[in-house]
Image 1 (cartoon, rainbow, N blue to C red):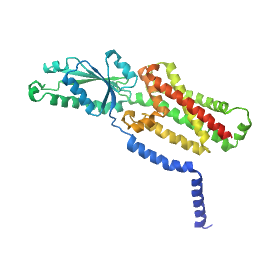
Image 2 (cartoon, helix red, strand yellow; image 1 turned 90 degrees about the horizontal axis):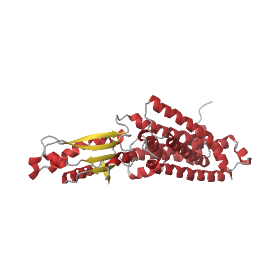
Image 3 (cartoon, rainbow, N blue to C red; image 1 turned 180 degrees about the vertical axis):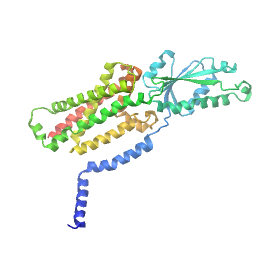
Image 4 (cartoon, rainbow, N blue to C red; image 1 turned 120 degrees about the vertical axis):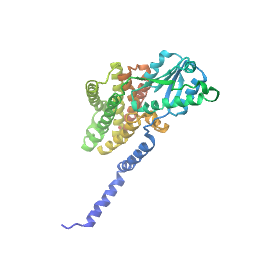
Length: 376
């Protein structure tokens, strides 16, 4: 049979008609590249600035205040709080609210004028080495510039001949700067997000495509009972995945587990339920398994890019951080990293736990409502 352009044209027209009918797929084909362009072009920043910083000032001399002003002006350090009690320094780092805590020692100016070397201490949350590396690299240049500007004019004779200010960096929770300490615990959240949302999102659509939805329609279980029955097996799968990843993290990558196991299990459990609720909601919105998979990818892409897993969260613009705060993975990462690496308590992680809990309840109720409408 010879090639016929009319037959090929007929198939071509048919495909365009199919694309017009399947609006969700067409929107995904257009929307995903646009989202990737926006996220990679505007939201991703490998040189994070305005990192949250607290200071513990023991001397309020003009030189000490000049150093603090220079740190602010550099754009890397956003000084948000002054710590009064030095014993709470590590607690502030454990909470995750601050990336740096800077100590200005007493006798700073006096010791410099005497020709003595003075050490400035900076405490660093080193769980994500990439987020703080550039800021730490600016410290010496900032203080050297301050010394040159301060000791000039009438004070030129008092200027030290050699750099008198030295920075002592204390890296907490990951002193060696091992990237696996940050990546592997985060992988737990990424894997659970992908698998839990995906396998649940096809739960209802699979029934429709296989023609077994009619059986559920005539059975007595209510929508909430159907949802619970479909979710529980996947909860067990999530628990198995967590155990495998946790075993590999501690045995294969030698990542320390310093926190409370019960708190860790509670965080993982709520996170699994949150993602399963989202997946179940997707299954009520999609008409086919392909659409459910497309929704999953549409949700997974910003989750992995805007949560702080791949790129420093503090380096993103405010609008990207706002979107990231709406994603479960953004709140799970501080929990899993905080418990494993920082021995964080519930008080330090309470906001993240509450967000995941509220999201699980809200999305679950919406999914049940949507499922009831689907049955109708």
